[in-house]
Picture 1 (tube, rainbow, N blue to C red):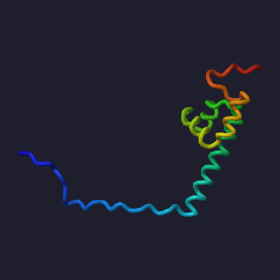
Picture 2 (cartoon, helix red, strand yellow; picture 1 turned 135 degrees about the vertical axis):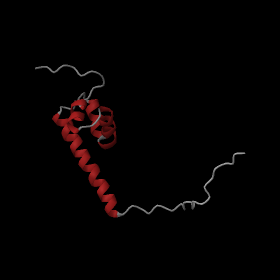
Picture 3 (cartoon, helix red, strand yellow; picture 1 turned 45 degrees about the vertical axis):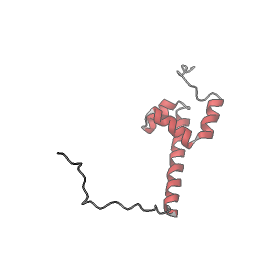
Picture 4 (cartoon, helix red, strand yellow; picture 1 turned 135 degrees about the horizontal axis):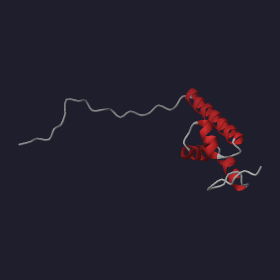
Length: 96
């Protein structure tokens, strides 16, 4: 007859409360987000708000680029969509 296999020799993990994040950790997170925000805006402006081009410059997937834009620069993203700098769908050929 087979018995259920249990390892009662392992001690059970204690659940511990997480310590609040330190001030330095919070500053580091804010600094990282601000640096990413700045790099994202610079890449978009350099690519004339062509998101795929900016994604290539930054080395990220276009889907990740969209997530970054909505997370880090939502007001600027919404303004760019509203005034036509970003369009959904195929990009129109440039007029030269």
